[in-house]
Length: 304
View (cartoon, one colour):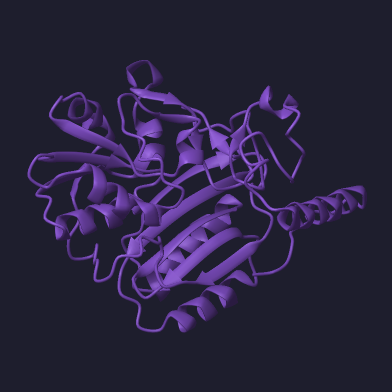
C-alpha cells in the first residue's frame, strides 16, 4: 500500500466569510502532516493536498462536521512520497479563474457524462470535443480527435469560444479538464452565452483514467498534474517527465538533453520568451535550491 494519499477536491458553494474559512483551515492543519494548496473564494473551495491516510480521512470528516462543504467533488490515489513541499491556503476571487462575471455553477452547469459513457459521446461526429486545459498540459496527453484551443491560461477560454464556436452551428459541445472544476465553470458560462447542449466529463481526466481500462480507452498519453510528479499515466502512477519551472512545460528525458535546457532556468520552449531579468531570478532560485539540497533540506521558496 502507498504511504501517502493525494486528495483533490472542490465544491462550488457560496461562502459568506472567506477569511474565517481560511483561519479555521489553518487552525485545523496546525496539528496535521498535510501539504498542498487549498484555494478559498466566495464561490467555493478548491484544493489538492497530500498526507497520511488517516489525515485525509480526518480532513474529509472535518469538512462534513465543521463546514457546509458536504458534497465535495473529490478523488484520491496513493503515492509513495508526498508530492508537495508545503501547505498553502490562498484567498482568491475565484476558485478557478475564468474571469467571467455572474457565472454561478451552483445554479447552472452542463450535463455530466460518466467516464463509462464518455467515449460514445466523443465518437459522435456531431459533437465538438474541446480540451479546456492549457497548452503545456495538453502537450503530453489528450483525448483523440479533441480540439486544442491553444490557451495559455483558463482566462483565454472565453476568447477561444467567441472566435471559434457558433451558438447556432455548434449544437453539441463536450468538454473535459483534469479534475472537472474548469468544465463546471466553463459550461456554466457557455450556457449563459446561449449554447443549449453542453456536456462535460464528470470528475475529469483523472476520474476517467481510474474508471476506464487502458485497452478500452480513447485517452492518448499522460495527464499533467499540478505537483512534483508532473504527470501520471493511465494507472495514475507518476510518469517520466521533468517540468521546466520557467514555463511549466513538461519535458521528456530526451528534451532534457536539448542545448537550451538549463535546470530551473530555461528549455527549448521558453529560451526566447523570458527576459534577462527573469532568467537571472530563475538562476538565483535554482542556486538556492542547490544549496538547500547540499544541506539535506528542501528549498520551498518564499511563503505566499
